[in-house]
Length: 265
Image 1 (cartoon, one colour):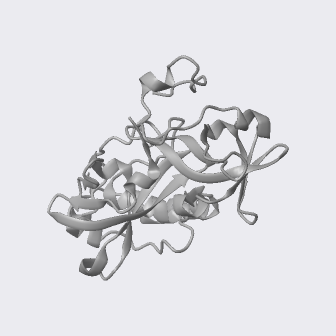
Image 2 (cartoon, rainbow, N blue to C red):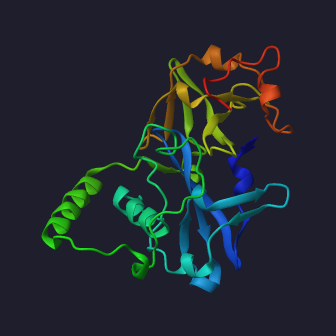
């Protein structure tokens, strides 16, 4: 099922043994267009710290109740690597986060989630050092490999962007401005961003339309613009997005609907 990203804002996040906090933001990958992390504000129980929660840890989202259930304990979250969410998250920080929780790296592989198409729960490396495998090894070789890995991660671009930051950016068609980013539509199974909701009311009173991420040419962060490979007329003539209805495969396939992307559902 498809949902608007804004539906998650303010949702209560529940661990297996108690409440973690509320959703404040989402980080998406502007290269593969998927939600990679939910930013949770923990409140006073964790000294007002904000933490990253991967979709790999999400068991269920009760959309009608505004509750996200995760398969983590409060202790796991409390002891997780600290990340300053007010600054860009580096690939090195992501790698430490994934190693701690034992999640696979989504950037290692050709699928949306690395080796998988969906962020499935993963039983991997344990954050408890006592459970790590033991055996003989050359510590010098291990240190050299880790140093090479660290240099690679330091130079890598994570492509993570804040949904709260991008909402409000101006949409620039190939022949001029046509609206602004109003929202994102996500697939709650794969956590992929399927559409960008464009508010054209400055030009077309009362109308919002959907654009596929495939139409994005590039995003200009200094100019706060999303440049698309489409003309103003092509965007103006798109069907109006009815925000009172949840998008579904049936509605997307209805007569007159725009052709959906390959592998959409």
